[in-house]
Structures are given as C-alpha cells and as structure tokens.
Amino acid sequence: MPGRQQDPQDPGGMSARKLGPFLRWAGGKRQLKPTLMQLLPADISKRTYREPFLGGGSLFFALQPNSAVLSDANEHLIKCYEFVRDHPILVARYLRLHAANDSEAYYYQVRSMYNNSDFSAAQAGRFIYLNKTCFNGIFRVNTKGKYNVPYGKKKSPAIPTENELIGIAALLKNASLRAASFEKALQNTSSGDFIYLDPPYPPLNGTAYFTHYTSDRFSAHDQKTLADYVRELDKRGCLLMISNADTPLTRKLYRGYNVVSLSVIRYLTCKHKRHKVKELVITNYEVTDATSPHSKRCAEERDS
Image (cartoon, rainbow, N blue to C red; front, side, top):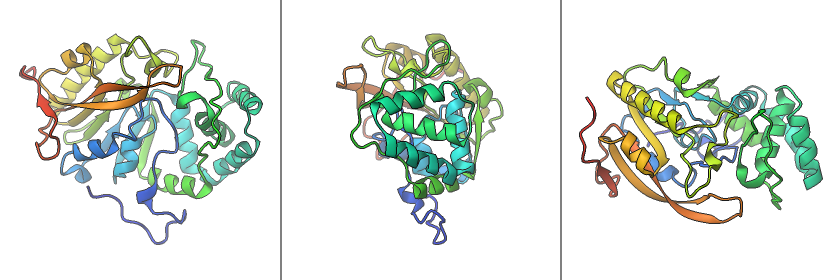
C-alpha cells in the first residue's frame, strides 16, 4: 500500500513510516491494522480519506493519506489532536513534567485539574498523560461529562517524546480535524470518497465499556442510524469500510454487504482479563479471496 515517502528534512528526525497512534483507545485497531490495510481498495491513495470515529486513529496513521477528514464526537479528543498538530513542542514540554512526577496520587491531582480546566496546550498534555496512565486506556465520562477513569498503575507508561509529537504534527497538517457527530461529519461527503467507520461497539458479554465514550453514550438506535447512513453513502458513490462487533444486530443491519469475520483479543471487563471475541469488517466493495481468505458475503441481496 503506497504511503508517504520519508522526508530527509523531517523536523522530527523520524521516518513517518514508524509513526503510529500516540493515544491508547478502547477498541483501537492496532492489532487489526495489517488486516485492515489488506482490505482497503487498491486505489485508496487517489481518494479522500474520511474517518468520523477517529479514536486513536490506527488506520489513519498506518495509511498516512495525502488528503484526510478526521472527526469525532469527543471534543476533548479532537482538541488534543489540534494542539498536537499546532503546538507539538509545547505539549511535549508539559508531558515531560507529567512523566517525571507520575504516581497514583499525582494522577488524581491531574485528573481533577483536567475536569476543571478549559482546553489548551496544557490540557492536551493532561489528556495524553491521563490516557497513557489510566486503566486500560479507556476514555469514560460520567453523565456530567467528567472524566472518571481510575489510575492504571502502569510501571512504564509510553509517554510520547517531543520528536514523536513533531512527526505526528507533520502528518496531521494534511488533515482536516472536526469535533462533530457522525451525522454532521458525513454530510459533505462526495462520490469516490473512502470512509472508514469504527463506531463504539454494542455491549459484548454484558459489558458496555466501548460505549462509555461521551456523556451521551452510543445506543442501539445510533447503530441503526449509522447503518442507514451507510446505505445512503453507498448510493452516493462512496467506498465504505465498517468495523463492528459480531452480533446478530450488526449482521442484520449490514446484510447484503461483504463481511469478514475476525477473532480479536480484547479487554472486556474491569478485571484485567483478556477475551477472544469476534469482530466484523464490512465493505460495500468486493474483497478478493487473495487478500481475505476469510471473506464471506451475506446471502441476502443489498437493499435497493
């Protein structure tokens, strides 16, 4: 898959190829990234890349598209991306301070400051620090919108370096960032755009950690609304890839599309236990057997 060439004048002193997500994110696609890259359309480099559920952005960082529209309903997340893009050195300075003082007591002090501060470069540093040191990389807020994830007790949290943030900022310069619901984010799509949709998943095995994303959550009704948007975007001429949990609801909502079933290891409970679960990758374009031996098209015809 073609990507950006390494720039010998890279101000971060790093190959862009080595840059990945700088945030942990529940339901992130780090482990599925090679498979997702194989399932992309062959001419992806010629298309505008859109991702309305950005999260950690694993696929964006792997693909490094020349033109991208990145959005998310989580305004704090998008603000963090914006400050990393525009002020990477300043954000890195705050991160060094947090890394030097990391402890459980310090974490809760930072969390309290985070919940009582407006967004700034300092707040972006708090966001990244909390993300890297909290339990399981979860972003979860209560009904008042206050971040409430406990300390994760990680021995060596992977705090991004200044060079890493500078390199990430360079990649984000070619991307449009927007805090918006998926409905608003998808309003201005054009025929030929490629859209990757990775919504918060329906609860699995009685858990709901992937839905604790904004104070409004992401409901079964939202899942149905998203599926309706997918069919509208399909008619508009967009190419679509959707990741979701392998549930009867998901299969029903996307019947008629191409489906790849994958086994994934996830943390699904608050007990630090990993579980093997099934996830689906759904496309509205054909995936060849060579790239996806596990591909299976649903029996029903796509809705007209």
